[in-house]
Length: 342
Image 1 (cartoon, rainbow, N blue to C red):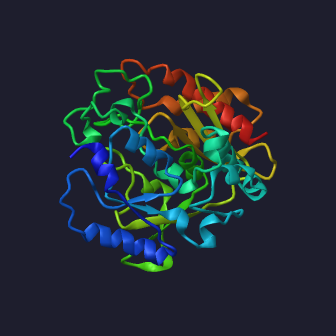
Image 2: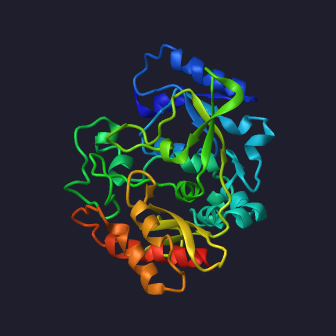
């Protein structure tokens, strides 16, 4: 059966409530599906990443569950400590409440893609988009993540691949928002058919994503019948997000850094720091060595701040074409720190 034939057999589910959406997932998992290449079911919000997979011939789902049909206002709600999963990136970037409470989150949303994409792309979609590795995205390559036997980046073109994580798959996590939420100690709210929808399960950000060595074919730890419905986060008024790109128009960042600082009463000394790097590892990469070094530093002491940020590359294992990331990562972290303290 050709890929176009599989596409013609895709069904669209339009659940109106979270309970119905969970039932669609649960029923789809138990359906007998004897058509190769048509896993059941797939969740869709704006569907940007799903359409990319479809066009490349990477997937042909038997059923798509359209989450935009849900009539639950909480999925679109924005506040100083929570974000609905269906909130658009534009809404997050433009939210005064978010920008005052946690500037890092608004800045990360604002830096994503283009205005046209931000107007439709959702918070949930940004967190759970698939890797942008060109070997994964090209149907000609049967790579590890697609069930193959090798990561072609190891001996191939790896300019944009990971310098942390130690493989065996060397993708970088594509979400801007995930890094910012990590330093805001965020939790993702999850519902499923098994638990119902009354009290969502809370998954801390550091438990949401997994390394390839733990789960090769998926980047997150949620079950196939679980649906992310929202995000709760803690205020981080002294926070910032900084990206380094090859060009400032729409482009994937080479590296990015999200920083949240707790300041002492004098307003100049860092009491505690949370630092997360992106574009360098298969998951949002927390940097405890930098966090410990920043604690107790007066932000006016630029030399000590720079020395602390230089620790960002500790433990890195660059590949043949991406050692340049080790030069720009400390710069990104340092600039994020400077932005966080104004």
